[in-house]
Image (cartoon, rainbow, N blue to C red; front, top):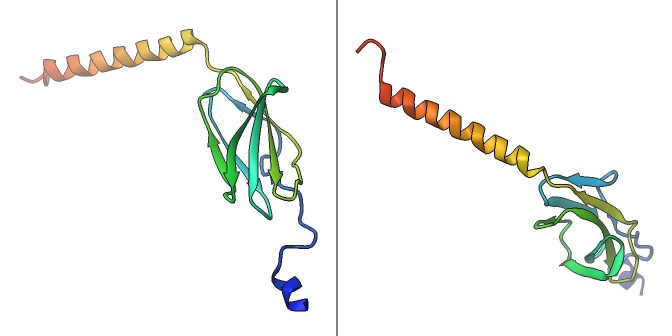
Length: 127
């Protein structure tokens, strides 16, 4: 019987916990979520603390998951293991960059590209 206890499940398993020290902010709509757990977990996400939006993102024994395709908003993530132990919540806020900023960067890239093409077509000055 002692042998079974030595190789069985831990008697006092700790609740799963996120490895991020605090809330996460993303301006791209994606984030890597890492955690520490003694057993397989289920990662669940709520949007704006609305239980109707709850969805399972991952279930298994990995220690991280990549979350992408998120719209602007506030998301709350939870971990739950098979024993029912639940982690403290992790807040993820997504605020995408403004469209004007992205268009400015595209325009700058286009100008640099055109300047390079013009320099190549013009050739060396000593010819």
